[in-house]
Image (cartoon, rainbow, N blue to C red; front, side, top):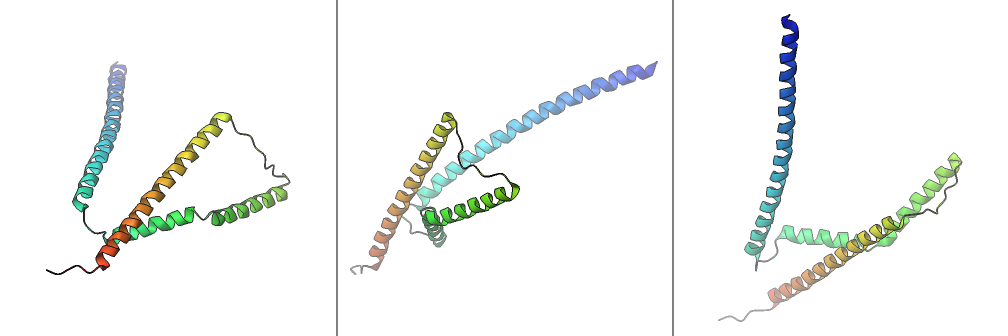
Length: 158
């Protein structure tokens, strides 16, 4: 006689706990999102402070290493023969595998116009980004040359 009542109480408790668990997970997700937003805001503020603090200072060795790394990445991106050779090698391997399986590889394919336009926009944005990065690096190189010339010129003594 008490067993069904006990099961009903347990069932109600389980339902309540499941509801609280769901609410807690929702709050946790929202808190994580807010934490990420606040972290991003703090990072922006810190980076702006760092830029103001470093204004007028000479470039640090680690910054110079980073500049060299960026220039080498840009040079690698501007050397398409390296990637074309690798791509040709992969296509040849793919064709060989297809011949061994017995399915000839059909190089032709079709793409929906919307996907094609999205891809085109994405590639244009990437190209614009790379051109901007190139301009920034060139401008920084010119600034570095001016700084180097200024350091090499003898200063008049008073």
